[in-house]
Amino acid sequence: MPDTHEPGGEGEFVILPDCDGVLSPTVPGTGVLATHPSGRPLIIGALHGDRLLVSRTPAGTVAVLGFCPVDRRLLESRLAGSRTPADMQRAASGLPGSHHVVVSSGGTVRAWGTLAHTRRLFYDTEARAANRADLLAAGATALDETALALRLLLPGVPHPLSETTVWQGVRSLPGDHFLELTPDGRARTGRRWSPPDPELTRSQAAVLLREALSTAVHARVETGGAVVSCDLSGGLDSTPVAYLAWQRAPRLVALTLTGLTSEDDDTAAAVRAAGHMPGADHRLIGVDGLPHALEGLFDTRPRHDEPFQGLQSARFLELARLARSAGSRLHLTGHGGDEVLTAPPSYVHALIRQHPLSALNHLYGQRGLRRWSVRQTWQLVGDRRSYGAWLAHSARHLRSPMPGQWRVPPPLWHQALRLPPWITARAAQAVSDALTDAARQARPLAETRTQHLALENIRTSGRIARLVDQLTAEAGVHTATPYLDDRVVEICLATRPEERSSPWEFKPLLREALARAVPHGMLQRSTKNDMAEDVHTGLRGQRRRLAALCEDSRLARMGLIDAGELRQACLAPQRPGPLPAALILTLNCESWLRGRVSPTPRSIVGGTVTGGPGP
Image (cartoon, rainbow, N blue to C red; front, side, top):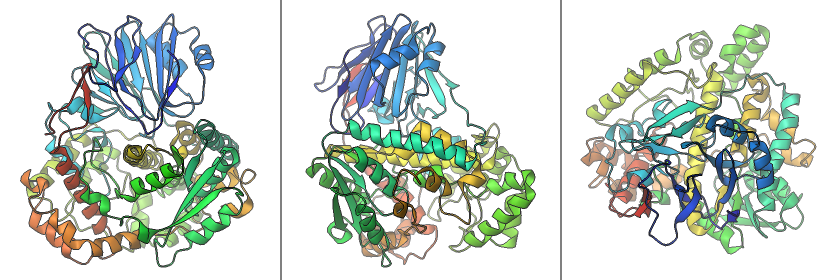
């Protein structure tokens, strides 16, 4: 089967076990993308912006779906000598890029996505897997009300409950695991990756990061077409990506939003950066000419297979349309840079036990930077609870007051978990019970608190990036996030956290990595605009429209929120602090539920393409 590549974003597909009774799709636009060695359908679906690479060997079939800058010859050389599904999994692991891998050997299927969850897999009780949860749930599976209630948690759903979906009977695969489907209809998971020990010095990691990030950008651009677009915010994440893209793109269209804050220093930084990229088509786009920050909340078309976890701004789609009108089908962003390049400040918890003198310097700097009180600082370094104990403690304090704006408590295993005031007692109890149950057997994602929270943050960032790509695909544009490629993630996690982050320097690892690859002036930015002003402006200007979402609320119908209290919160002045974020999370769920009332997108279940009403 030849390599295929079409314009747009990530496609939709289902992975089937190697057994009888599988029907081919009957709706135009979908088809069999790969087969088992037996000849039965292995992958059914439709590709939009993804590349499909299929390799057949005596041991079985390997399919790579997504961005992977290798050809069939290199893939087959890696697979040479493989005899079992485990052999083929090891051989296909570690490929560069961002993609799904599906292996079929000896009647057994193994499949996985990315560490950062930019490429996810979901599976059900019938041993079927898909890259969208709603493909497995369409028309037949009820919503999981507890999972929906969990999505009202601020700042987000913690591990391991973050692997649940809002559909009963459908689970998501953790990025560090593989899924195995057997011919007798069973599905099981196994670990395929463990976090590296953070042993690299900054100088050691910088060499590796420069190569990995350059490859991630250059390889995409070289296959991205005659025109490639990118964000150029002027920040330290998007600017190097734009420059690396400019090095290889036949034509680069760089988009800069202006007027997001009253003290906008992003625009000037972006203009200076564009001066280092002669020939780039730099476009300044005034925010007044775009949809406002909260417009996405009022669009209930069922694009996503789960509620959005951030600000689902309609600007994503509008910018994609602008990029597409300029000829671009690939848009590069700096999304994920914060999460991979910066270690959570909880790194001082381990550092003070290993290198006390160095840790005191970092602790002093972090305390001043983040305005921790003496009590909060001591709590950070003195807390010795296991992850399970922390999770159980959190379950008992979900209704405690939300932290204030100025002295946000430092993260222990995670940020403090809180529920919004408009949640019902029944829903709050369901969330507390779910956390308590999970705490009994919960194990952290990594041995240290900072590695655990770094992985949590990276996964959250990747899930948001995936939903943004689902949105921009409507305009025929794939949104790529090079910082969230597996190789980049691994290198950053393998760096000593006190050298990846510092209260005295801004993203020192990135600065050192790109010092010889990017003009010096592009790496001097040490500030980051706060987008809270833009959000608060949207909240003030859209109070009544937001309040209208509380009328006939789907969440209220399910008994999860008090619609009156939510409406009051929408109409009240929003003070700086966590409450606006909690409000947006809740309204994301409400908006998503309203979209589920409409007919679902084309769905593929059990080899048959179907469509049907949502729950």
